[in-house]
Image (tube, rainbow, N blue to C red; front, side):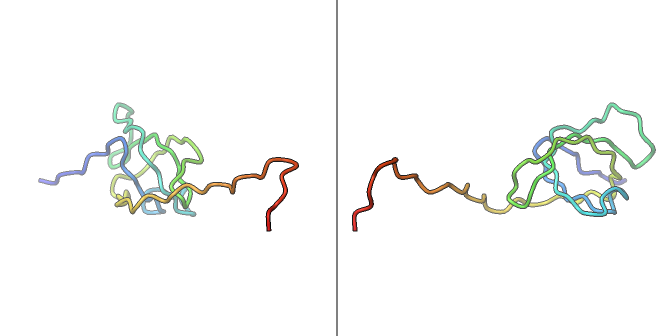
Length: 97
């Protein structure tokens, strides 16, 4: 008896060509939901999620058709602090030296 790991909202998945030929360039996706009610070929499934950039921020919402066997779960690392722009000097203010 084999037990499949369930796909849950919030899961981080690293998708490569093992998941589908469309991933020539691997991506990381944060799952919104597993679309289990859609009919597929054996071993394939649909997921809806956000494609993430290298900082872990969502750059695109996608529906993806993937091979279950090719899914790789990612263990999230420490959060990356958001970068802030330096505060701007009010116009007309002079620098004190």
